[in-house]
Image (cartoon, rainbow, N blue to C red; front, side, top):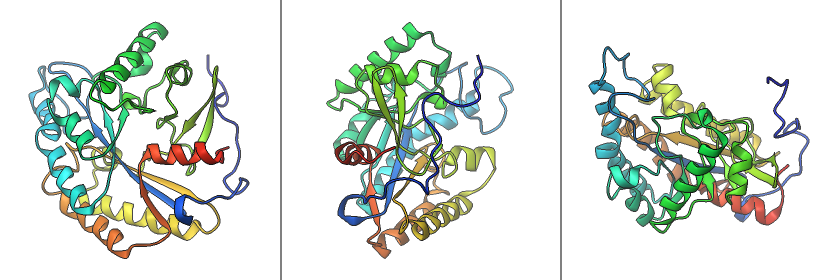
Length: 293
């Protein structure tokens, strides 16, 4: 049944909320959500470089697989040079299909957040029972590598009517599916509230590069402009920018230099208003201070 508005949160304009700081008096929380994803060979969902002509779709499958085999490791090098932790958004099937990749995220100190089992299937198509089972399985598999997740991003940003309730019941503290705000907000669930941490569908390489056909320099300019604009506002309110990246897209050799240049420029500027952080640390701060609406 359709509804005129989401039952998960009420409207409240960003100009009418409590003011607060991020740790150290900072005002812009900036984090990078890196999507480590696996796909099916011969079917299932997946971004396309060009429309598939037949199955198995060797071209698009191999293009996506490049991210786990090469692009991810190139991004590790970049974020190592920048001395930045990221939020690793992991399909749990990565553990079995790409041995060592999930462990590399863990070992470099990245936050591990859950991203379903696989990106070959949209979560919102599952029954309630199936979805509860998937959430439990993903949680247990990620916990088994020593990184029990507290944050969730649904594959393809797909939710059922029950998803927030099931995540809260499973012990998740925050979700990244809702791109409706520049601040963390609370989503109503049957067992209380679940924190929504902003995750961009704009500063996100899939919509930018694949859907809008932008190239690396255009995407890097979007990132720089977003930071500039948010810094111009942050004296009035604290804000969050989550930058969404996929190793099979920005991990391509011709795209890394533009991204590296803008990030190095921002790091070198050492703006005291920017908190370089993770989605989980943002959730921690909000929970500790109780500031989210």
